[in-house]
Image 1 (spheres, rainbow, N blue to C red):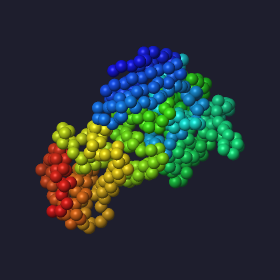
Image 2 (image 1 turned 90 degrees about the vertical axis):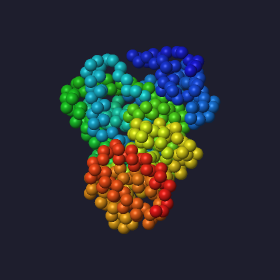
Image 3 (image 1 turned 180 degrees about the vertical axis):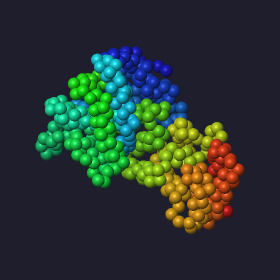
Image 4 (image 1 turned 30 degrees about the vertical axis):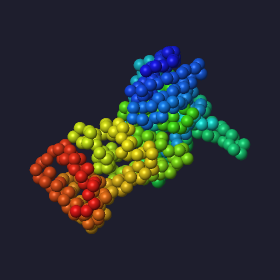
Length: 456
């Protein structure tokens, strides 16, 4: 590996070696070669050569810039969480963990900088689109709203906090309007942050993401009142939050570059699951103008899984094993921590790069079948045998769905007979106390044969 930049950049108490940090974050073990140049305006230009799996064309180049921000300087900009991003998913545990980390750092040494990690953004003319870091930044925005509430209750001026929450801007008609520093564009959440700022209750019909947003506000207010009951101490904490909490903002000028950096930073599985990374990987294959259409199809997949309270990763495992050749994996089983790597290395089978919409449509068809096989709407066409399976093996039993997905292409009469066979097989494994691991390995080994069958 060769690199033309060897400068070290010192940011407060955080020392960043540009060569080391960005080499690790962007291309360690991913590319055959990397060349980068660095200039004094915090812009790095990368020249990336072809990856081992052939997924990146030679001489691909992109630019990124980076900023060392505090919460105070961060919320002088405007951010947008675009509608193709996942919604707010943090629950009380994640919110309180962040607050615990902050209060611990504050208690230890409130004069020392506290590093919050990195966020990835795509820079437009008048705002930054958040590609990675929206959960944290949304939580910090809600934290500012909570601090404002407590300041008001204590008759303390809120001008500084207000300026971090919204600012006056001029619209297309030349009118001055207030624009919130963070805006959520995903479905049914566009005004939730405004309602939280205005201390209004959640709407009667609120999405799951909306419930988490309002819940985060309530959790923060309770946490601060319990952990920092003295208002004098709370003001010191607010100062620490605004001026001593720091993160690195990575800024790109092309949406595809932003998605690529997001994928690379997160592909080790820290904080994101393979479903999120797969969505990102597919979005990188389409033009920005197609994002909304693709996101609607993706939403149909996740909504179907949510409707049956199913884990996306279990579906992904069964989808892959029932549709593709995984014989090169140990025992022919793909495990959750292998999903992303397997998909990255098996585009020849999946074709998600060449035909991303077809791949997503295939996932959608499998999700629909998955739901129908798990919760049949009637007892016709052999469905009575699927109804019997949870009665035999327990309501949490789902191994048979792998076999049923493999049988999706069978003719209806053949599939009805196959359902009867599957019930008998499940009955045999239960009566003979066959272990789950052995059953899964056995079923996975049958999938390649079953998916070739059209009639019995």
